[in-house]
Image (cartoon, rainbow, N blue to C red; front, top):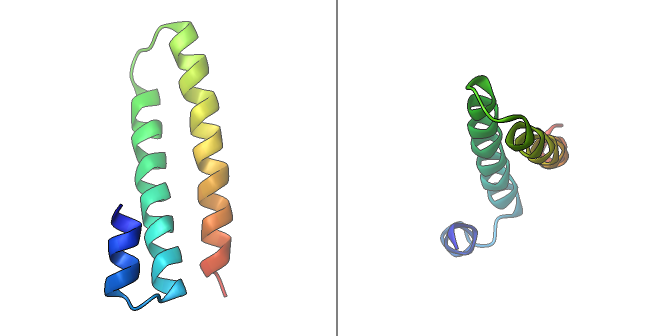
Length: 68
């Protein structure tokens, strides 16, 4: 939803949309990394580590779109 609002406000500025996507992925990645610092049951840790890896890959792809 936020991306749609941002798109309308920014006047369909692709750079602004990509920057917002990068910000969101960065925030999600930080939350996963913070969660992995604490104690988790082994099966939960496995799931969270896999999800963190997926979010990291997504962040890296989006971040590469805004690098010169």
